[in-house]
Amino acid sequence: MCSTFGYGMAKEKPQSSGEAEATINASIAHVVLCCVAGQGITQVQGFNFSQIGMHGNLFLFGVFGYLHNQSTRFGLNIGPVYTLSSRATRFLAIPCMMADLYKDNHWFGGLHLLSGLVPFTIAILGNPNDNRALGNLVVAGNIISLGHYSLEHSLEWGCYTAGAAIFTYYLVPQTGPKIMYPLGLALMEYCAYRAFRVKLQRKKIILNFIIAVLLIVDPCSNP
Image 1 (tube, one colour):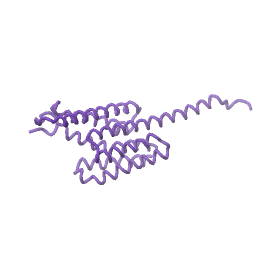
Image 2 (cartoon, rainbow, N blue to C red; image 1 turned 45 degrees about the horizontal axis):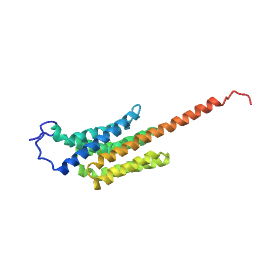
Image 3 (cartoon, rainbow, N blue to C red; image 1 turned 180 degrees about the vertical axis):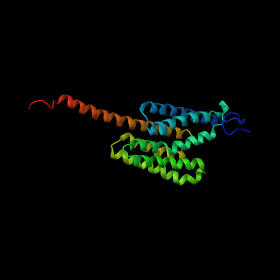
Image 4 (tube, helix red, strand yellow; image 1 turned 135 degrees about the vertical axis):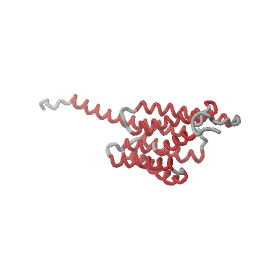
């Protein structure tokens, strides 16, 4: 009898060559996600919601995904943890990003955070199938909000993030093999931290320009 989590996993029957190859590919895909999310963690300075809810969230999912696909080798059963982490990547990543984009508007930022926390909590406490319609609606709303914000503020990589989210959350579950979800998350993660990085660089460019103008123009000079 296997335990629900940890060591003591029941012995599984040998995998076929195709199943073994799919498991290896899935493990590699989760390692790729870890690498991209780790890069995202290092790019962000100071506390923000994306640091934990997006970059850290996706990094942990990559770690759990690798261990889950290599559970036979390590003798672990982390299926429940992997499922929980998978739900966190679906419901929390984009809302946390939106909360940071709207950090100057506490009402909008808090609303986006709640839109992620509520379906995530319901998915944990209840049957996820009962929450499917609400979850899909909330995810779609956050993606639409991200697209609108990106177009309104000329945030090119924000638009790419929204496109990657549509691919990951809506197209992959219908058509793709299990390696496509972590790879889709990796693409979304890369676009997301590029969005913050480019936005920060634009602010620095504007600030440097203002400083340069102030240094060049002497307001005390006589006409």
